[in-house]
Image (cartoon, rainbow, N blue to C red; front, top):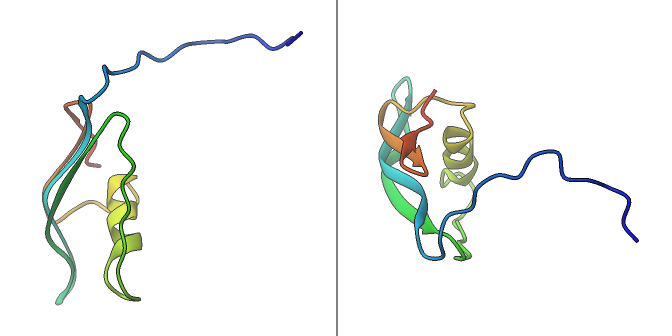
Length: 85
């Protein structure tokens, strides 16, 4: 029998609701455009892959979504609330 206990349960979104939105995100490092108007959304229950060759901006996109980098322009929302910065 499990002995662990749940400290806090986070509310879950209904199946199919948009959880994460990346909307026209651009990220520049000086004169280098690392992300150029990237947009996509993830819905609850979806499996999403971000693929591309080396240097395509996959890690930069992930770092923008997690707050490591602040986008030059565009928005990132989780459950409808901005998570930029």
